[in-house]
Length: 341
Ligand SMILES: C=CC1=C(C)c2cc3[nH]c(cc4nc(cc5[nH]c(cc1n2)c(C)c5CCC(=O)O)C(CCC(=O)O)=C4C)c(C)c3C=C
Ligand SMILES: [Fe+2]
Ligand SMILES: [Fe+2]
Image 1 (cartoon, rainbow, N blue to C red):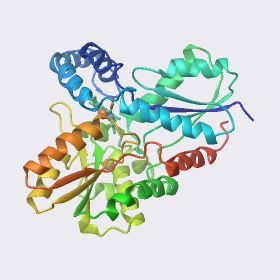
Image 2 (cartoon, rainbow, N blue to C red):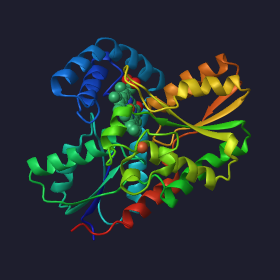
Image 3 (cartoon, protein in one colour):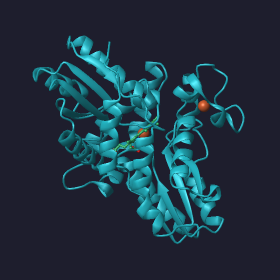
């Protein structure tokens, strides 16, 4: 069979580090109702306010991590695509970005022109969130409906505790752990607490009590980003046989004034330094490719904050990127999916 394509989808980056391109990207991203989840007039107002200062500040941050070939997120996602394509023999392997280029629309149109009949959509996010996974699925469905693209579509579910994924993550971390460390921090992208309440199917489980994520199962676990991050973390700690007091979890990348899920990474990094941690390893398992959030926020800003608070060094463990075990894991996860109806 050569008509079963994989469409890998990541978040996307600005076209360049020019302020105008960063503004265009932030506008498309933040006007997505799954990202800033308030009615359009209020969303337009909030985003317009954010767009006064943020594009210049973000452009500067992007400039500090940008590569000759482009945005690290896009370049690394392309490398992953190329490696997956070497092993996936059922059809083409395409890459799309939810925001910016290559768009989901262009990629799906290209697959239709190549005679593809089945598409497995692969949101490149290990844990579920409406602001990442749902928006990718809805955009793919919109394009198929509007362009009348007759694919059989199936979707790779969040793989936060699939054994192949956890094994690849553990393997990628092992060389860093072997060099010695005092503490391993697993820093995930944050989410406004409101998003967690919205996706809670019971309306009353999430963020109730200190151990709500430990108690999550079934439909609650399926929709709770924070609980899935905890599952990834304990699965990884188990695979690496880590002592409980040598690792912890935190959430980074807040935007705006709303309350985001805790504990916050910036406060945790400072607290760890104050507690006497000298060599801090940080992994960012919500990201499968390094990007501004890992390279700049943790690798640059986080390291400077850790040192200023008394730590010696913060070492950022690279994301899975195009690690061979991750490539095999992804293919194995896609192969296990049942045929779409
Ligand atoms: C309300 C705002 C945001 C939500 C909710 C959000 C969720 C979310 N994002 C990712 C993954 C990535 N985010 C990235 C960048 C980024 N994220 C936000 C805001 C929200 N994210 C902004 C404004 C930005 C742009 C950078 C900046 O100005 O600070 C990226 C990196 C993109 C890159 O080009 O490198 C990723 C990846 C997840 C997984 C997530 C929910 C769980
Ligand atoms: Fe984000
Ligand atoms: Fe929850």
